[in-house]
Length: 113
Length: 115
Image (cartoon, rainbow over all chains, first blue to last red; front, side, top):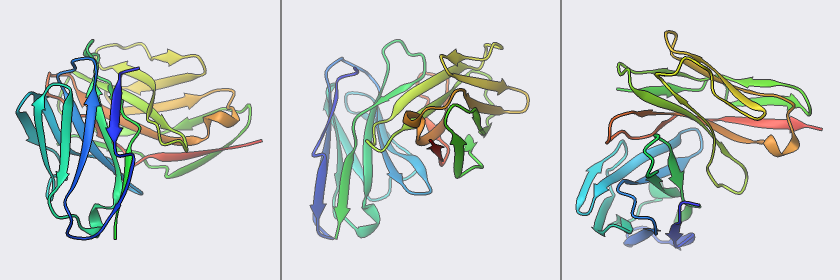
């Protein structure tokens, strides 16, 4: 158990509203990631972090921002949600043993109406 | 850029039979890892098996094994004695071995298991 908690697990919002998803980990992992999962696309990287206040963009970063002010929390923000951002969002951490694999949270389903 | 391709959107297998899921990848790196993840209807991402690129021996985990062909950049998953609980989406994934590598996924293969 990698101790990853995502919140909220489900959210329905309207176009144009801001949304923040939170990822919380309890084991001091350095690397954290946000992915989105859509049918026919697999999982695609949005943003990742390699330390406090150190973040970088992934493949599908447009319309998203992230922040990491402390090791345990990695926030994903949609400043103005659009229907194309309806998706399932997964947070992940890279294991401490650094054998390459990522461990995932349970996912957050976001619906933008 | 690294890519991962799963050419079988859906597969079906009879319970107790064997099935192989295909995956190819493209990279210019020599140090990397490959994975198969399982995603059942619960949506949880579960690591099935891991392969280090520097190891020639194919990884195995109980009924799951891989056929890793480094030169061909192929990484297939074999599931033996298939069980109803194996029904899920399966994702092949690649990560560069360096410290800032990011996991790159294929689009997935949906596996159905028939009783």
